[in-house]
Image 1 (tube, rainbow, N blue to C red):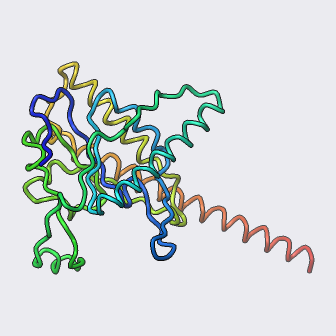
Image 2: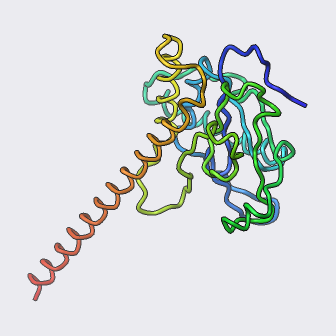
Amino acid sequence: MWRAPTDAKKPWVLFDINNTLLEREYLGPGQRRYHVRPGISRLLELRGKYHLGIYSSVSERNARYCVEAISDAIGDELDVLAAGGSPVVAWPSALFEVVLAQRHCVPDSPERIAARGGDEWDVLKPLQPYFPDLGSVVLVEESEHKSLEAERSNLLLVPAWHAGEKEQAPDTVLPRLVKLLSDLASSVAAGEQPADMRCHAARISTDIMGARVKADEEEREESKVTKTQVNETAEELGEESA
């Protein structure tokens, strides 16, 4: 069984896949289209500060396909940046150092599933078996119920990524997450913040979730104003032609 080294000098940041780093669109038997979350290449900035990994409830084979899609999307984003003259972060041979998948999860209890109206196949993602030092790891996840109650302080909750949502502000979750984690690493290195990641996960979650709510509200208000202006213009044109 894989376990994180106990002498690791950097904390671990684990990412869920579905609706956190990408959205999978079903096209038919054995066919998927992957919509990777914007800003995915910004994760490269965390490499020197954290160990990065995947923790997904999909099979290892499907996780591999998703990681390949993420890798392709990172390459595409870097190409766009380079073409625009922006500095490009070095692209390592492997971004994620470990991939934990379905077999690393455990079934959720029928009582918990029934209480939230979940699905019978819902699972939990335990951290303790793989990370003996729970202070050295956070799980970036869009579904709170996948985290064990005893490990809730390790959960870094982010808004779900749905590529096709309307009246949604441009998604800036990953760039904001990277900045907050980078700032934290600098503060910890300077002795200004405790190294225990559990002391910071909830604060970072609140920041990201709050920023998303505010951005979506502003987007909806802007959309209302635009629609009002269009309607007023149409009414004016109708009056002129009458």
